Image 1 (spheres, rainbow, N blue to C red):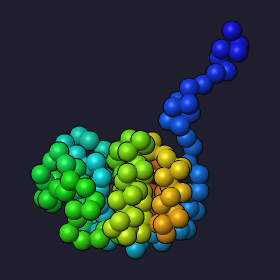
Image 2 (tube, helix red, strand yellow; image 1 turned 90 degrees about the vertical axis):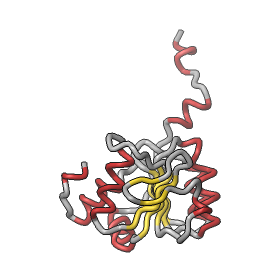
Image 3 (cartoon, rainbow, N blue to C red; image 1 turned 30 degrees about the vertical axis):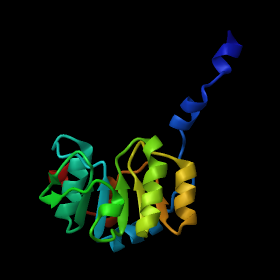
Length: 162
């Protein structure tokens, strides 16, 4: 019985990855201060979704958002794009609201467009893809909410977008 409990499925282990190599707060603070344009992959047009609330918060802080979702036409007054390579401008950061298994393909597109920062939201970790992004010169943050980190490290307390 104990032997059976010790066995794990390979997919289950990767689904519960812990992030490796997240930058220290000082670097995250610097990155947040430099970001002006954010591509948000998986941004929903539904106000009750976390992606929408985070995008609304970032927009209210003066950042330009670029929705990336092939299933919507517009979010928060901004035209939505089907993928990163279709964006009209290069974003400073790519923020991801997609399942971990989608991250490797997103990293490949982020490399193609020359993104500087890859930010995987809370609950999203893919260490192999993060390493690929780092090797391509990107700063990578995993399993953290960009809105919460912005509020915590840049001392903004705008609760209206939460």
